[in-house]
Amino acid sequence: MNFAETLQRNPVFGLVAESARQLGVEAYVIGGFVRDLLLRRPSKDIDIVCIGSGIDLAKQVAKNSDRETNVSYFKNFGTAMLQLDEWEVEFVGARKESYQRHSRKPIVEEGTVSDDQNRRDFTINAMAISLNIADFGELIDPFNGLKDLQKKIIRTPLEPKITFSDDPLRMMRAIRFASQLTFDIEPGTFEAIVEEKGRIEIVSMERIIEELNKIILSPLPSYGFKLLYHSGLLKLIFPEMVELQGVETLDGKGHKDNFYHTLQVLDNVSKHSQDLWLRWAAILHDIAKPATKRYDKKVGWTFHGHEDLGAKMTPQLFKRFKLPLNEKMRFVQKLVRLHLRPIALVKENITDSALRRLLFEAGDDLEALMLLCRADITSKNHDKVKRYIQNFDKVEQKLHDLEEKDKLRNFQPVITGEIIMETFGLKPCKEVGEIKSVLREAILEGHIRNEYEEAFAFMLENGRKIGLSPVKE
Image 1 (cartoon, rainbow, N blue to C red):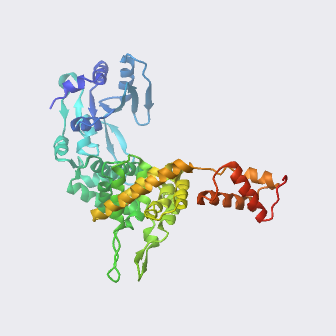
Image 2: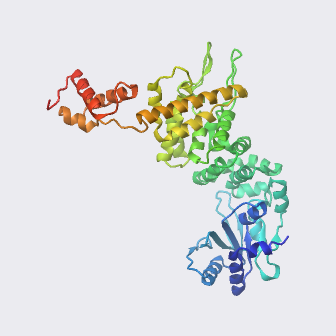
Image 3: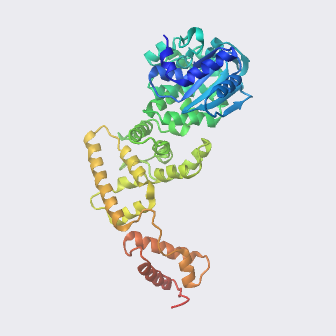
C-alpha cells in the first residue's frame, strides 16, 4: 500500500524527506500518525524516526524551513521537537531497547527501523511509512497492524507478557486505546494483562492517572472501566471503586449494583459533556456507599450520609491520584456533596426556601449539578425514568424563575461582617458570626430581601436580641 499522494499533500513530509536526503539518512513517519491516517482520524502530532541522529535531522528541517522555526532538544533522550504551522513534529533516531525488571526505563541502543518497530507497544502503532526517494509513501507493516486495524483489535507486536513486564504502563495504554477506539483486546494480550497486572506497582501515579483520564474522556468510558475491572488493574489502582461492585440481599430485599450504576451515570454524563471534572463527579458521586451501607428491616438497604462522606473522601482521592487540589477538586467535591439535593426537590409542594438554598449552594455549578442528577436516574423502567426527567424539567424551571426574581446565585448578603463590627463597635467574635448566619438564613427563607435598608434594620433588631447596642443610634 502506497501513501505517496496523501503525504505529498502535506508540505511537512516533503520538507523532512528533502532534509533526510541532504543528510544521507533514512527517515520514516511512524506510530500514531500512521494509525490515525488509516482510521481517517484527525491528528496534529507527527513522529519521525530516522536511521541516525533525530536531533540533526530536526536541525536540518528547521534550517530548510521557509519560516522561523524553534527546535526543542532533549539530548538525554536523543529527541527533538519543532512546530511547523499546526503540526507538532517529533524526531528520534531509530533504537532498540532492553529492560531491567525493577524499572520501566529502557536501556537504549542505536538500531534499524525494524528494531524501532519491535519496541512499539501495539501492532496498530508499529506501522511506518517511508519518506525515502526509493520507496516514498510505502507502508512498512511487519506485524500486520493494518489487518488488526480492520478487525478492530489491540495486540502487542511481540510476546505480550514480555511487552507488559518490560513496560507495565502499556497495560493501561492497551485499555485506553480499546476504550478510545472501541476496539477489542486480543485474548492472549488481555490474558497477559491479567497475569502481569501486579507490575503496575512500578509505574508512577502521574503516568497511571494520565491514561485513566484518557479512558474517562473516551466516548464510552464504561467500556474502559469494565476492562480495567476484569483485568484486575482497577482493584490495584482504584480499590474504592471496585468495592462498589456487588449486590447484597437480606429478607428478599436487595440494592442496585453501585459499580455498574456508577458506570451508567458516567456514560450518561459523557453523552452531554466533555468536561473531565464533571465525569469525575459522576465516578465519585456514590463512592462512599460501601462505607455507609446499612440494613433496616422496614425500608431495606440504606446509604445515609454517603454524599457527605463522599465529599470528604474526594480531596483524599485527588491527592492520592496526583490530581489538582484546586478549584477543579472543589467543583467535584461540591457536586458529590449536593448530588442528592435536586432529587429531593422533585415534589409538588417544594418550598421556595429549599430552592433558594440550592441556588445559593450550587452557584455557577447549578447546570453541571442538574446534568449529573439527570444522569443519576438509571432504571430499567423507562416510564419511571421519563417521569423523573419530566419532574426535573419542572424543578429547573422553578429554579430559573426564582433566580430571575431573587438573583440568589452566588449571592453575598449586603450586610458584611465589617458593617456589623462597625455598627456595634465589635472586634471579630462569635456574635458577628451569629448575626451573619441569622441574616443569611432570613434571606434564604424569604423573610427579608437582600437589600441594604431592610437587611440593616433586621441586623439591628437581632443585635439587640443578643444584648448588643449600636455605637451610634
